[in-house]
Image (cartoon, rainbow, N blue to C red; front, top):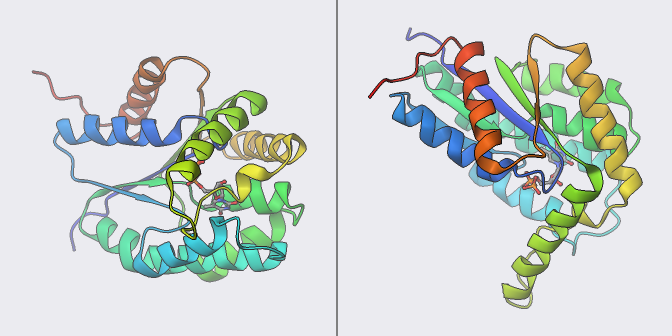
Length: 226
Ligand code: TYD
């Protein structure tokens, strides 16, 4: 059996700059000679991307919080089986944009379902798979939400009528995102070995430098010298 790869997840509020950091980190790790699989949740598999459309489209109305949680986990269970586990078995580094911490923060705290159902479902449906490292990008609630809304307004105005958008969560209130941020910080306090907090309020390059140094240190990766 090849050695198990490494599983790294990135978490943070909508609009905290996560997607940019995922791209930059993947590029740097590939330049270090690693085989990196970049993926995301909800989504990441063919079925998961269909579930993602359903979950994020503002056209999806009246979804109960438990139905939302169940769909997040349906996407995740498929993603683990189809993408994450096979890549880890091949010794690759899997870099995943959001994972179960998002469910604990958004559904558990944002939707007020509590952490217990999320953690129980993770055990049952995901074999309790834990990331080797989780990077939590911490940012201001107001600034992040503002950024996410601007981005999605641009995205929606470019989209064709009738196409699905990805704004459903971004329509939530400041109070919702305040609960999400507090839950993230609580998870980081509860699991300091796994979760590393990064201040994401600086520039993208500065944040990238912090994240890359952290990943190399925590995963004991050597930087390739030119
Ligand atoms: P994402 O595309 O990563 O949004 P962004 O790029 O704005 O950070 O994630 C989509 C949304 O799905 C995001 O608002 C958070 C939400 N989400 C949950 O509520 N629960 C979950 O378990 C996951 C994975 C995502």
